[in-house]
Structures are given as structure tokens and as C-alpha cells.
Image (cartoon, rainbow, N blue to C red; front, side):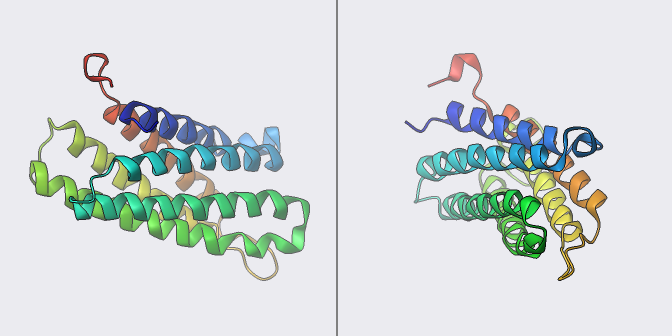
Length: 194
């Protein structure tokens, strides 16, 4: 059953797995295979949460619903890219196949973030610092930008070389922390829970 609480917890767990996997230096210690596995598992938490968000989004609020639908598509693309990363780690010539879904997923997240900001602005106003909805959407937007930066760094050439692995990991790490913070901000308070 889709609830806001479950959605927030699933986003929080997925974000935490992405953050752990991309802590600077983690893959050097634990190995790239473990980091890729954590991201792959985290992507499924994201997809389940995004599905709940889509189910909970009222279709009458078109921009909010479109934001949720776009994010859901982005999470599916991240399932593909994180799964491809697991495969590519084992089959080096296949590394070039990882970037396209990652870039498209990041673009979908960025579009979703913009639509989310537009939707919340229509409801609460341009700047409403006391609104948890406003805070959550803007923190999420920062995470979407960080994931977009990450995708640029993650570009893999035909030779299998990543354009900027540091930028890819740090962008993902910062994005994951933002998504974690946004999920926790949006988590219904104990008195409001379903």
C-alpha cells in the first residue's frame, strides 16, 4: 500500500545506499563491485518509492503528477544503468553501455525536480522557508543538479575510460545526501502519519 511515510522511508533507504557507495574512497576500500551493488539495490528502493509517489500524486494536479511520472521513468533508467554497471564491472568492454541510461535518468530527475519546484511554488509561493513541501522540493532540486553533474563526470568513452570518476562519485554522493535530506524533511511527523 502506498503511503507518504513508506515513500519517504524508501527514498531515505535508497539515498543512504547511494551515499554509502559513493563516499569518497569507499570503492577503493570495499571494491567497485560492492559500490556498484549498493547503488543497484538503492535504485530499486528509489523506483519503489517513485512508484508510490506517482500513485499518491493526484492526476488533477498535472504538474505534480508529471513530476512524479518523470521521476519514476528516471528511476527505471537508473535501474538499467546501475544494473549495467554491475555487468560492466565483470565485462570491461561493456563499460561504455553504462552512461546512456545514467545520463537519461539524470535528465529525467532534473526535469522532475524543475516540475516539482514549479508545482510547490504554485501551491505555497516562490519563497516559503517554513513550508516543509517547499524545503523538500528545493533540497530535492539541488540533489537533481548534483546527479546531473555526476552524469557528466560518468561519461564513458568508447575505450572504456570514465571522463571524471571523482566528479561522478562526488556528484552522486552529494545528490544522495540531498535526496536523503528531502525524504526526511517530507516524512510525516508522528502525529500526521497515516
